Amino acid sequence: MTHITAILPAYNEQISIGSVIIGTNRYADRVIVIDDGSTDKTAEIAEIAGAEVIKHPENRGKGAALKTGFNTLNKTDVIVTIDADGQNNPSEIPKLVAPIVNGEADLVNGSRYIDGGEKNTPTYRRVGQSVLDIATNINGKTHITDSQSGFRAFAAHTVPVFRFHQTGFGIESEMLTEASKAGLRIKEVKIGVRYDVANNKRNPISHGVSVLVKIIHDMEFNRPLYYFTVPGLVLIIIGLVAGLVFFGQYLGGHYRSLAPTVVAGLIAIAGIFVSFTGIILDTLTRMIRQTMNK
Image (cartoon, rainbow, N blue to C red; front, side, top):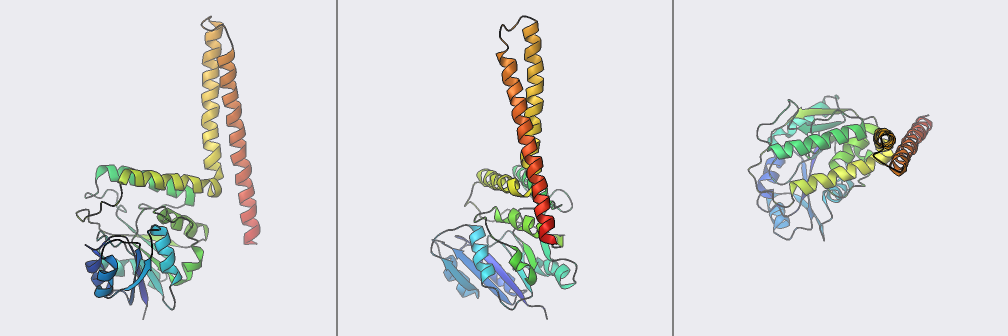
């Protein structure tokens, strides 16, 4: 018999938390709600609905809530994370858990976009999701179609892999990157989603930008070749093109000074240095990983 523990990070979810817990209880042996500093009745309703509740005295972020939840685990086979806002359907938990139980995966990601578009997703959200998916896949060398999904299943042996450096919503991408780096088998299954539930706690644009910034920052360490070399090449191209244009205009008498050409040349030189920095760091990273794997 597979023992399943469900972790629900929650912040001011008094409207939906009860129904999510009741639905989750049908498929999980243990339901843990991390009340992340809620100022409403989230914790009280969660307890009435039958969940174990761990309270943060103040709002720390989703990553911090998941860290608390993972740190409480013991004697379980599979961990399921599900958002408490009602957008995910707990009845799909067996679908997420099945690949782990069957020995096909170590981490299962519920994807809204595994078959391409999801008709209920607002266009602006899908565009933002696509950008985050691309950045996450580059950073983690993955092929995930829904990197920001909070509906996932984990085999118990994967718990030590996750460090929870990101305290906010960047945790979704971080966990995928760390799983990939650890060589875990990642599989996606199709899930549904509801957008008719109340979820006004964060602006989707500012949320997406903040997550993207964190992914790019993480890329500095995981994929220095992309973080440094690609921008470096862009600077080289800009410097060379601008230099040729300015020099041509100087020869044609449009400029009396070579200053613009010199500036363009310095931009190209800066690009060369940045590019070589990425190449050197990438080489060092590969050497370190090879040494650690021996």
